[in-house]
Length: 387
Image (cartoon, rainbow, N blue to C red; front, side, top):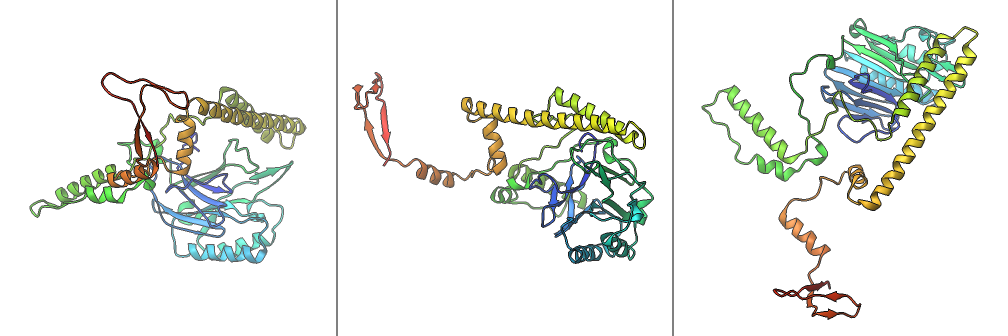
């Protein structure tokens, strides 16, 4: 997603969904929306139900759907009815997801019951199917189908470009690229970096203390008063929350990335393109075999690199317990920046963890355990024994 400069990702069956304001999933966790861009407006008016999730991003209503093949036709129809009811009356709508439905309208060989349900449902709305051509969006074991669908309001369809991306996803599903309303915003020069905060680090008492005594003079104009209020709020946010780092153009690669994996990925992408161009020719079988070998080699290299990186992390933990392994665990449990700062609370924690006991001064010589204590000329070394 970062290589392509995408801003919003519509995901079906994500491997993992982060617990942040940039992510929202449906009740089953199988459909998700991810704000992966740098200068993307935040998600508003989100709603998560079984089968789909929606959010308003910059005035566009974006829906992510996943209707599992195991759903009965009754459950499938119920989810579609709820989806259509939620979209009714809305403009600037974009829908994408894995519907697991077949219909001749989007290139399938025949129309099944699910496909007829979708066609009947969208007929009552002013939305347009964006899928073009008959290229399969899902391929497995030499067989393919078109089950990943995209829709948009008729007002957006004229400025929306749909295509299947020439990228390797390590999945049976192809990556579908949607460009809505012209070129991406990231191609435009940015005047300044947007400041964002991590909401999980918000400290209420610090925020309230920073805004104590906030007052606006009646002599100030509306613009001056608004600027003073905005500056004071920004200062309070800086004190009570940590800023969220944004990934720029030159972001760090994932921990398991290597030059070998990059080379294998290029080889896999080239083999994949050759398979697509060889359809209907005598070279399809040979190209398909070459692509499978390249894909398997890439997956094995990634797996081995992840395992090796994990073992290195464990070895590093033995020598440096507060290093990268500690930071990784603390980040996962979201406990690194939630420690209290109130002196009274800290004093109570210290008293419980390190109770004050009787003080025993050890004279020169050896104790019962054979440890040698040396007396300084200016003071005696003392041993504190807890109760």
